[in-house]
Image (tube, rainbow, N blue to C red):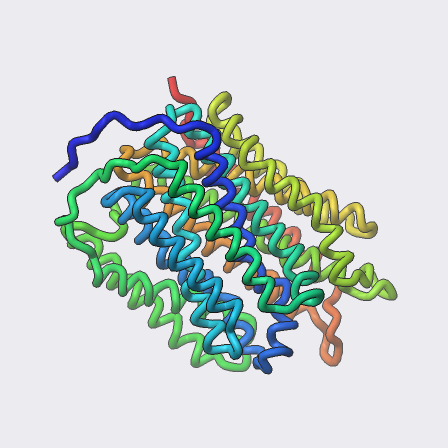
Length: 465
């Protein structure tokens, strides 16, 4: 039963910027573990396996929470769910900040993972309270600031952890999350729930989806070590296939599925998911490979850069990623989502192939990484805006959450592919990969990204007539 809808209350720039501030702070909180993982391993006496678990647990939780948050936001109202979700995230940030050991830190990361669900809820709110053209720009702003916040978190986490302590690298962004949540609660008007509360929750579908994503992450984590434990990896692949088959069967029969497979079958949705996966795979490979190349000793083919120097070299990419979202939102309103996605794919493919051919100077890597960050923001934001405006307003949350889950999967697969290539390209008895391993990684990522043009050209232009 659909609720009776009152005319939406229009919002001004302060409310949009409050959502943007929330995106920056959650993006920063999401990204602090990756650059400080060696430090955390030393301070908490973690094994490599435990470090690998810590590095993916937030992504797993985020991939699970995002479709649930989108579904509940469509059903109960975006603001109502967002505020409660941020309370969970804030609690997770505080637990991580105070964690004395690994189990407590893992609990904090699980709670923090709810932050990924903030994006589809933000998209519900801007689409509810803004005209279509303005909502595309607002979605671009929020998406760009989330990416920019993530980059800022990666750059600042190391200096904060070394200059203050590991506790403060979680505490500072958590304080920002709490302040931004208060601002959103005060400035953003309530939105009208689109569905009644008696629709039920697809708990079985959610459980099978959870099993699918957790098993997939374990397969990706173990893939580089397939030679040492092939039976374990094979068993996980069989288990993954069973989860996927069971999930599809349940979702096709559920009265109110957590993810409506009929929606996923729509060309506008599946094409957005495919393009997002590919562009994030290329981005993740670059995000992994470029710092590794900076770190290789200057006596070889690398630059021997310190952690602080690497952060400085990545700064232009941070700026480009932050600006890409608003640029894509404005461009999608004027030229259409297809044009923005195509531009992002072309830029990224060209940057990756260029890095494979030329990477002998620091500025080669700086410019290449900057263009990749720009391309990622252009394409992913275009896909989110295209998806958000191609479905009924009451389906905005769940539709955009599908794209965001795909983003998480693309980043996970790309990172593991980069790690596997460097591992395979490291000579026996050495800890330095051959230069050809980096070249191969950039070429593979560039070719896969370029192939996405075959999908992009079949999309509708995405310009509202």
